[in-house]
Length: 441
Image (cartoon, rainbow, N blue to C red; front, top):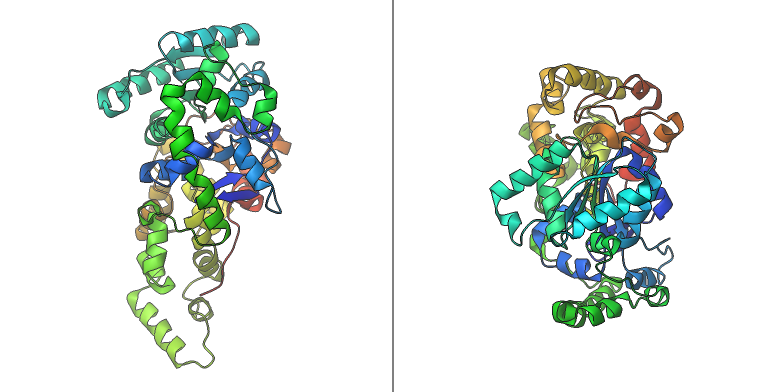
């Protein structure tokens, strides 16, 4: 998938129609605007939450206009207030899709529920909840909300709490939600559908002046956001274009910190793929050569590691550090050349019967080292052990029309036999989730 970079936030260059189709197989959607972009420079947890999203789209005409200064401008602005009604229309005839609305003021979410259900002609929204201010700091209240969402049976969760609260809450709790496949962080979208807030005229939105309309509606609440916090983004953007902007160090991913601090040999050692002796031996050989081979070439030539594994750590790991996204553990191990399709299918089959974690089974069978699994969980994708395998899908899966909706979370899909045909992992890899970049070490 083509990406567009704004400071430390990468966006998916995708149309709304494409996004709606892809959400058939699940995913988390965050919508970036200028206010979010400013907060991403200041809030480390918000940054980690943002980078974990399956899809990050642009909800700002200002940012869309800025993208036109590049050779690959964003295809479309996807506002959260437009995405929610579009999602409801797209899936109103899909009886397996149900929604839970979390957020807005008391009574507003229920109004939105009535509007959506009347338009859909069925009970598309099955339940709502409007939490009190500060609820996110109350562990018991958060657990009650999780239990309520699970009890509702909803497959889509719409969260309208404002940024960064909504994104962080999803990041912290999404893996406790048993039935939810789609997570949408959509800000004031619930209020708009309920008729509690008025959308700006189309001409203002097209000119990037929607912020002015909202400021005139709620000056006391929004004046600081738009008049004080927002404008510095343009200076940051200019610095970034000139390659002079530096991201706050504390927001770097643990993986980026590791790569900055350790040479590739020590990273491979930490991942349990090379012994300390072999790392030292390769470094000695490299120092004696003229001209020098890269560390990876020396390791691969001596058969200590497969070339695909070396290439992954040398070429793809730096890219992951910059555009981190949560993917199932099997995807990372596949991309690193440590598991093949047949091994992954076998693990999924056992996982369906035992409920064990993917990494536990891979280690038990002797296919990967426990230190390697620990490395991926600690540095590459902390949540990847608990992610559903529905995001293995791609255009190839879409052509097969495989129905993943019947599987239990973390279990093998009912269409498991299709894995061997379409190789979902490879398809996702081909779709651009593991694009190579950078120089070899």
